[in-house]
Image 1 (tube, rainbow, N blue to C red):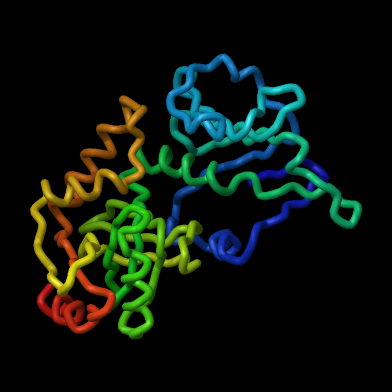
Image 2: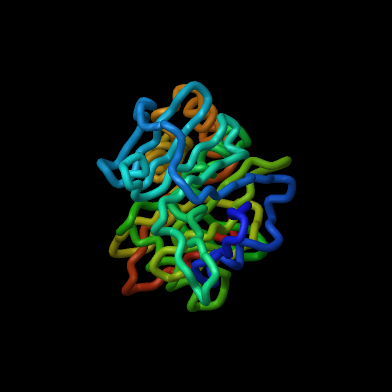
Amino acid sequence: MTYPAGVRPAYPGRVLESFLGESPLAGDRVYVELVNGPPPDLGTWPIAASLGETWSIRKSGSLRCMCVGRPFDSPPNGLAAVWTGDANRVMVYCSPEYTRLVERVPTMSFVGGYPVDQVVLMYYLARRGGLLVHAAAMIAAERALLFPGVSGAGKSTLTRSLSRDGWAELLSDDRVLVREAAGGYLAYGTPWPGEAGVALNHVAPLRAILFPARAAETRITPLDPGQALERLLPVGSLLWHERELLPLQLALVERMLKAVPAFELAWSPQRGVLTDMLEFLHRL
């Protein structure tokens, strides 16, 4: 990441800083240049996706632009991140509020972070056999267990309960990167924690996918690939607005669900689930 000349970076906290050193994603590089000023005239680009006036993704040929706030206003307010179709080079144009004087030195906020980094990563991974999933993950016996679910599905409660029992390490409690590799799939921690604030810069082979569900008693039920697909689509960061990239992502999900066993994990917070999980792992 390159900052403007004479500007000092300000990093937002220990979680993200733990991902700024050595990465398990050996060989992957995304070059980000931060520009202290307004973007080129991108406001006429058609909108591909948006969340009202909060953010939008615009496109022109193979170029994409994510606008946060209103960076095209005068004066500008927000930022605009522009990247190539391959998503390995990004220019982030920042409005003045992102830079302030700290001990008389111009200091710029880490504008390459959320939500720009998540969106650029979605594009980057789409061509490289990877997918960002709304999920928690744990590492047990050097293998990762993935617990996908929308907010409120109970994945954080479940993984907190299991991690307190000490039988597994919580890799992430909200966002997990899954990537195809020789001989299987890998699960990576990401710098975007959830309620538990857990986000480790680790990686482990993916052993199983378990979809949490609340119930009176614990049941671990196998799912066929079609049943697992119905549950995974709402929590996968799929680029529904990209005609070229979406088929690549859907093909990846299909391959993964044929290779990695999936289950519904029905459980009760009052009754606990550790004994059932230990038996499940023994049989797996």
